[in-house]
Length: 258
Image (cartoon, rainbow, N blue to C red; front, side, top):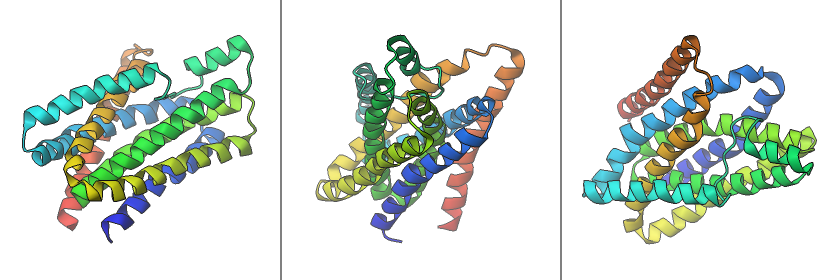
């Protein structure tokens, strides 16, 4: 397949398919399964960031200092964006968005915030997928797998918040699907923009690593600390390791298939 075809397939898989999987999971699975998905997603994100994306970013920059400085700037930037409610992640229905909804008894506000934040986040995911595929198809596949692994538990949380904000199941699904199209838009815009300015691709790779590290460490890991029992901790460690191992396995399979 061409690079553009890979970007289209990965963007659709990272967007619409993640929403359908999350909706099915949220409506049929037990809520207790969500933390397990999140633990796995942490491993997948960290595995992709440190085993694939960051090494490629350093190689593309041809300067480890510059690449790691961009990663640092990216982490700080995502922190600021999250503070401004432009970067909004919510991984279970007890998040602050739901608490704010309960406090003000506003059935639409928290859901609207989630949709705005999720649309922006999906657009950025599309840009990162495009940058990765334009550098190397193997890197693009691993990056897309990590994004999908993270998207499903996030979309489960978003879906539950929309339901708690007063949306019907069909409306929650429709709005989430509409938001997911931003991944495709981001991927297509990035493909044509980055084709004209190839020198920007290494910067986006470093930012992709920064986003994966930030989401895993700042957004997902703190939620795991709410369960301190030894049994829960062992489960979390094993699932995180499984997430890392799945990325390593994907690298191996793609490498040898190619």
